[in-house]
Each structure stands twice: as structure tokens, then as C-alpha cells.
Amino acid sequence: MPSLDQIFALNGGALQLRSQRLNMLASNIANASTPGYKAKDLDFDLAMKQAQNGGSLNQAMNDHTGYRVPLQPSADGNTVELSVEQTLFAENAIQYRTTLSFLQGQVSSIQRALKGE
Image 1 (spheres, rainbow, N blue to C red):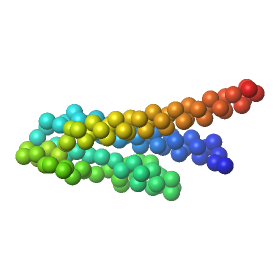
Image 2: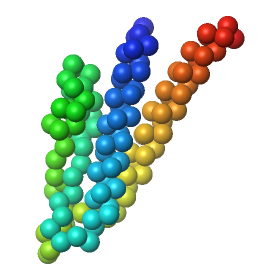
Image 3: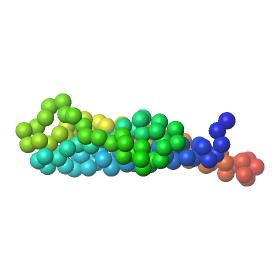
Image 4: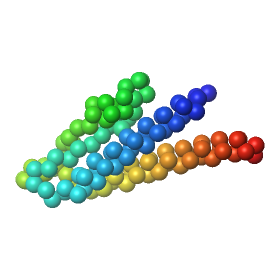
């Protein structure tokens, strides 16, 4: 059974990665009309694996952030595909809330145990 430190580190790291990804996707959406803007994304799964294997969270974020290759490039060099970004943002927001709910449940369980409930 994983220790509390492991549970909180794992899920805390996941929240940080999801938050960073939400910021990137929001930036992509905000720059959908900016000529030459290159859409960025974070490969959450690869970054999380690197962090779980002992890498630092910041290094994992840097190592697994890249520019997205658009399905249909625009003439002005902008690589944001608004519908793709909006879908990814919504999916990531749901995953963020799910991780946060799990952490809140863990904290609640610990509080009940400490109170003897």
C-alpha cells in the first residue's frame, strides 16, 4: 500500500501538470487569431511517467512540452485549431477536477480517521 507521501506527491504532481497544461491550452485558445502563433501542448502521460521515475516535475514539464502539428495549417502560420484546443481543454479540465476530488477524498478520509469516525 502506498504511503501518504506517495499518494500526495503523485496526485499533487498530477495536479501541477494538469494545471500547466490548462494554461498552455488556454494560451493557445487566446492566440487563435495571432499570426504565426505556434500551439503548444504538454504530453501529460510522458511527463507523469518521468516524474514518477524520479525526475523533477519541472524537468518533466520541459521535456514533454512541444509544438503541435496542425491537421490543416493556416496561411498566416498560426497552428491553433480552435475546436481541437477547446476539446483538449475540456478533457483536461475534467481530469483536473477528478484528480482534485480524489485528493479531497483522501484528506477527508484522513480527517475522519484522526477524529476516530
